[in-house]
Each structure stands twice: as structure tokens, then as C-alpha cells.
Length: 607
Ligand code: G6P
Image 1 (cartoon, helix red, strand yellow):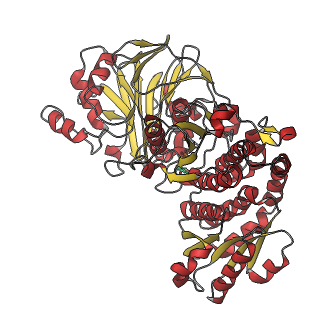
Image 2: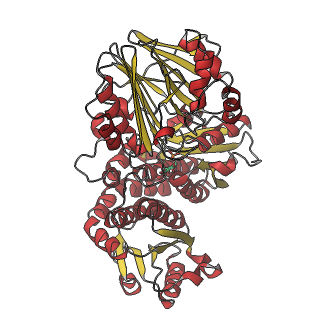
């Protein structure tokens, strides 16, 4: 969603901000803009569309200034157009803002201000510029604090004023902002990705904090304007990881990184001699763990599918009743939680607004809340009382791939750790870990089938509808495969637990409705087989994901993609990969914008 980058220092701000915008593109956007202070004169340019369009508009007019702000917009209030793009200016053209979030009471505020201020956009954000202007009496931080005291909603906000060319003021409530610390230069951004070429030392603003960035330092205050002292953290990611490294798309690179990042996720977390795992960040004693009576996974999108897999493995290994819920539903439901309920919030970005709200709700109700998060230092990581980083490295394609497998990898280790305190025997634990150990090389084997998968995907890319089928632990895998296909190729697709087809979806089957089914050798293999026979009998083409050496599958499927065998609990780690590649190649065949699919954002920081 909206991306913010701001800079104050001694370099020319324009190229730096433009490069920053490009690094924020992955979040998803529909328009972009930049404002730079050149002495006391304000240069501002905005456009609907891509950053290249903004670059073209700027043309040869390159302001020399060394302080500026820039923004990629993801429309919420107001159509996609130049006048709705950020930065937004106040009336006197001296004050500009960029904003991520939603101002809930903007209608009331706008109605009040309209008598004396001229509005030029349909956005909720513009009201902030006028409100700050109306509060302004010389001290920009006071003006921002005064304006924000009247605002209801969420914001990651950066403000610049031509009368204060040595100052940027930032504020956060609900929408992330990270401050990068350089040598006499400071950065502010929605996430750390655009900061990587310049600094790894950062500090994360918390809700209710206001920061002043000057060339000689950063000062942070709370909303009552009391000074706040914050730690500086070091980002582990390097700039190289945030590049495509020769791949055509980030998504393909991230799919291919899975064997490597899987190893990163589990390194140091397995104890083979005890047949168990140890995830220290859980921050619970063994007796507290034994006392857990229920596990709830909350998440959105792909992370939700990882949670569904969690339900299967937790109930099987740990014998703990388990639920999984979409965070946007969880947060508004009267969910029954107590101090024996362990809530896992799963999130790649650690910033998804609904998942964060679910975390807050669960904590309020006294549950034990832990995070399974990729981005170190993100809000969910900070607001949970422990948890585990999945160490997938920067994931920049909107469609999540490697983060999914690493979420599953970590959840499986949690299930084993809990299971070994209860029902799982040493031998079973060790067998589990051995199978876990073999996963990366088996992932590599599947990745080596890329050309074969591409050929199959291309043959099917022209169909308009698709059905994904799975059973048991492979039902969430089917959901994930279907989500990947629809989000990046725009082919309509559904996923069903195969045993449920008779209750509706069978009516859709026929020659125009191909079916991709996961039929690997596990306890539901025979059941799945009969379901596929039914599909064939109704004339649909069938693509099968089957276990290596399954000769029967060859007779059943029009196309068969094989995967190495593993124990059932670990199948999702392998079975998902051909589905990711299938979606990727179908989308490239259709010439889609694979890394930045239309209408979608990487990090959904508003409700
Ligand atoms: C967006 C992204 C998905 C992601 C979901 C949850 O919809 O496009 O790829 O799965 O948000 O994001 P999170 O960062 O919380 O895992």
C-alpha cells in the first residue's frame, strides 16, 4: 500500500527519492509524486500511473535541493488521478505532506476547514495539509501535534515546510514509518527497503510518536511533546537480496530461493537428539506450554493458508484443539479467548492492519499472543510478547511464495515442540526431523522441473476458469495455488476440498473448466483418486500433482507433475512449489505484471 520516502542530508534529494520510490513499487501503487525544497522554493510534481511517468513529467527540471518527500499512492478515497496523488499542498503552497493511512473524520474536518481553505483533491489525506496549516504558528512540530490531536484514524505522515528547509516532521498512528540513520543525513520510509543502499541503522516509530529529522540528528517526541528515547536497530537484510539478481521477476527469484531460505528458517531450531525443536522466542516455560488448551492462528491472504496448515499439524502432533481465522473477521467477532489460549499472528510484513488489530484484541482479552513474522522490527513483531522470525529475507513480489513456505516450516517446528511435550514419541520426533532435513533438496528437485511446469502452464493459460482440489492437509495447498493463480494471472479460480464437490461445484465441471488436483500418496490418496475419476467422467481436463513413481496417476491425469515423497505433515512444503510455478508461468504467458498485479498491494496497512 502507499509508500513514503523522505530525505534530509547533503545529497541531491530528487534522484535519491526517485530511486526510493522504485524500491517501494512492490508495495502496490497507482500514482506517484515528489516534493523537493530548493532553498525556500518548493518543487512538486505528481502523476497518475507509474514512476516512469513521473520521471518523464519531471524531465530536465531537476531541483538541486537536499531535502524532500515522495509517495506512491494506492487509492482508497478518491479516484486515481493526478490531483489525488501525493504530496498534497496546503493553500499557501509552502507546506506539503505525504500520508499513508485513513483519516476517518475527514468529512467533518473538511467541512470545518472549507470556509477558509481551498481543497483541490477528493482525498482524506489533503485535510491533514490544511489542518496543519491552520494550526501553524511557526513551530512545525507543534503545528503537526496540534493538527493530529483533532484527527481520528491512521497515519504515517511526513511534513515539509518551505519556511523550515532544514526540517522534516514525521508522525505515526497505525501506519508504519521507519527512520534511517546516516552520517548527517536521515531518511524516513514506510519500510526499510528503500533505505538499504544507504544505511542499516534504523529506528521504528511507534504509534503516537512525532519525529523531527534535521541534518544534525533526529528527535522523537510523544503526542504530549515529551522527548522519547529509542534504540537503534540494525537491519539484517542486504541490498543485494532486494535485487532481482538476473531473474525476470522478483516472484520467480523468490520461488527459487525457497530451499535456501527454508534452511535459514530452521537453522539452530532443531534438536535431533531429543527429536524436537526449540523456538526460543516463544518465551514460554514447558509447563506453560503444557497448559495451553487451545491454539488460534490469525492471518490474512497467504499467511492465512499457512495457518490452515498449522491447524492440521497442531491437532495431529500436539493434540491441541486449534482454530484458524481470517484476521478481518476475528477482530470484530466476540471471540472467546482466555489465558490458556495461544494466539499466533502470522504475517510476512508484520504490518497488515487487520492482523495487527487482531493481535491487539487478543492481548486485550488476556490471550497469550505470539508472532510468526518475516520483517524484523515490524509492528506485529514489536507488539507481541514473543514469537519467531521466519527469516525469508526481503519478499518483494506482491504474491507471497517463500514467506509462505517459511511460515509453514516454522509452524511445523512449533507443532513438533508442543507435540514432544505431550504425545509424540522420540522416534516419531526424530523421523519428523529427518524428513524436515530432506526438504530443501527435494524442493530443489521440484525447481529443476521448472521447464516442464512452464510448458504445462502455457497450455492451460487461455482457460478462463480453474478449479483446484485437495484434501486434508493439501486443501490449504489447493487454496494457496488457486490464490496464486488468480492474483497474478487474473484467471478466475476456486479451490475446494475434493470431498465437497458433490455439493455444488460438480455443476461447473466440463471441457472449459480444467482441474488441478493434489493427489500425493498419503492417507487420503484413495479418496482423492475417486474424486478425480468423477471429475474426468464430467469431461474436465485434469492436471495432477502426484508422488514420484505413481504410475496410476499417469493414466488419470491429462498432465502430471511429480513431487518427491515425504511424510504427510510436510507435503505442503513441496506440493505448493509446482503450483507457484504454474501460476507464475500462466501469468507470464498472458503478459501480466507478475510482481505488481492490478489492484493488489504487498502490505495492506489499512483496513
Ligand atoms: C496482501 C499480500 C499477500 C499477503 C497478505 C497478508 O494481500 O498481497 O501476498 O499474503 O497481504 O500479508 P502479510 O504481510 O500479513 O503476510
